[in-house]
Amino acid sequence: MAWPTGPPALGRAARKTLRGGSLSPHVSLLVVGTVALDNVETPYGKADDVLGGSATYFAAGASFFTQGIRIVGVVGDDFPHPKLEFLKKRGVALDGIEVVKGGKTFRWAGRYHFDLNHRDTLGTWLNVLETFDPKLPAAWRESEYVFLANIDPVLQSRVLDQIKKPRLVVMDTMNYWISSKKDELIKTLARVDVLIVNDEEARQLAGTPNLIKAAAIIRRMGPKTLIVKKGEHGALLFNDGSVFSAPAYPLEEVFDPTGAGDTFAGGFFGYLAKHGVLDEDHFRHAVLYGSALASFCVEKFGPDRLVDLTSAEIEERVGEFHELSRVPKGGLGSLPPRVSS
Ligand code: AMP
Image (cartoon, rainbow, N blue to C red; front, side, top):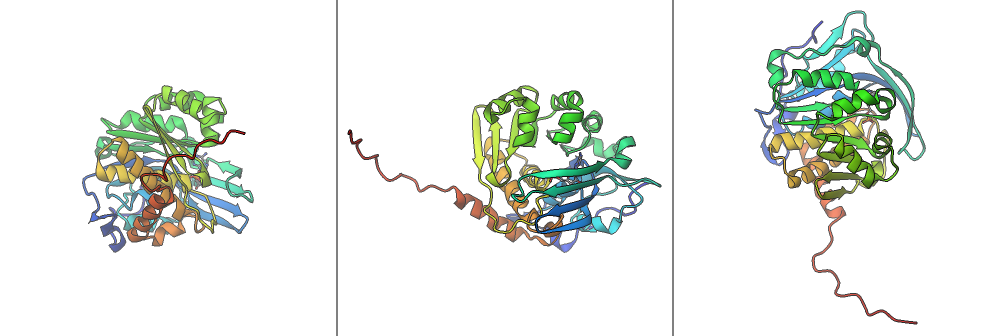
């Protein structure tokens, strides 16, 4: 069954974009991932049947930068379609989401610890994902940019098989797949340009506690670029011979970290796709935009904060990110002479 909506309708919110200019109309950014219903518990509250999924958060983040976002995924016919209306209004194409008649949507349940940097997965119900076989519409095989959001690595590979000549392939994954499908994951990894994971996942994947060593090991597995997210401690970008460290935004109120990683990826990739330049400087800016988007995501439960967010708010926060690690040029003079005792 196809998704019961027509082509994407650009709402007023979607017509304006970051840094003035119009949304990039010619970009094609395909994302395969989960569209989910989550049950989330944090120290501040509990909510059931919250809209979730890696593709959902990614598309929400990327939609501030570019048109031409296409979601490939699957839900059951228990999925409440109006929950995704806000993405359609932002110009995201939903017709690649298959609706399985009589099937149940993928579900995830998680509980966050007091420090919110750690969470326990209480349950993962693959449901319709177990038999999902993604088939891309012919026109989508030409997609320039591809994001393999967190999903079974076998499905990530099957999507890549169908893409003709992507300009950039970025991938995300999580501990669940590193533990259950490591061999398949490593095969997919060999085909991607950029991997985005959190620090625990990087250590688990590389089998070493030191992040710098882990980065070198992972980059030898395939991706030339590695981004390691460190929650409230920011993110690291590893490229050939360079490491860039972005701070995290010092938020006083974090309600629900769910989806922050995927929203980061959406901001990161949306920025790159909009500008179309894939050099170190653009990667660094993209990390700051991703971090800014993620910092908004955690302010409310589920993707709620991304629904009413404005481009002006994003630009303001990116400015604050620059200020966070700005050091005045010139220094304070030379060090005082050493006093020997
Ligand atoms: P994040 O907090 O960025 O790691 O993403 C959380 C989202 O990922 C939730 O909305 C879940 O529905 C989704 N999710 C959780 N576990 C999985 C999994 N094993 N595969 C794909 N998506 C998942």
